[in-house]
Length: 165
Length: 203
Image (cartoon, rainbow over all chains, first blue to last red; front, side):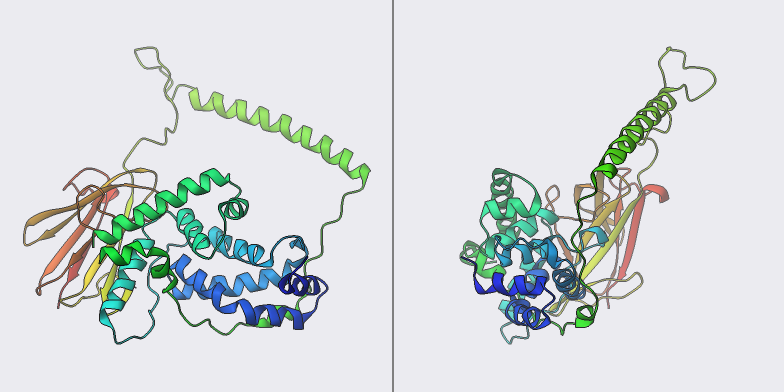
């Protein structure tokens, strides 16, 4: 049975702007956090964020109501901006905090994350968003096994990078 | 970084957040894309004929291209009777681009050429090459050469991870001037067409 997001998306397919705004209000923060981690750049994340939501509206007809809205949304977000071929630089400003150790750890994490190959990074970020290997495989057009291998490799590379600092 | 933090990788990553920007919803005033409709049968036949013609033309072009590629590069063939490959992409120096990111206070920013950094700052390296190749990265400070690492560079930007060389960044402890090099021509060799360099003044 379709959930509320899927029903809202079905209304968006009919051109319902209020349904779009409701979906946007619910998913704006998780989507932006994902894009921020994926791009490592606030400026680039903002561009991808705008582009993702525009595609949700413009390409609503490509959504299959049998599919979870979240999967469709994050698949767009995982692929948007890939054609831009712009360098990714970890330059987004971190949350303000008085704990300098925490800031240091986050800076280290951002740099280490961006030493991963782009697709590995996107897959890992989808994985921590709760996506199963089969769902990630569908988003990237590869086999679930390939996703598991990449996830395992990405995690171990990231750990190595973090422990080396 | 504390190993216990690294064990909790997912939580660390989830901690990377920021406030979403306001969305420009101007696109809501634009019409949504319409689903593509199936082409009429007559068009399908025409398309399939067109595709066959294109395949045939593609085959001819590919054959011509292959003939061109193996055609002797000069009017006289090499003495050993072998054929040269014209325009071999592996010939010649491989252009390299070196970029630096600087961590200043709590922020990571791209460093612009000529910009100064402060003591306590740290830089990280990103490399791009015209085509896949091995690139050596090193630093020169007061005549001392310090290898930073070597990596397999690609046309896509690659971070220097220190996989071979140990270092991933460079911390500035004193006021000085350091020049960083990235070269596809070998360690401590910096020809202009295969090497990029940055001089960083520390203030």
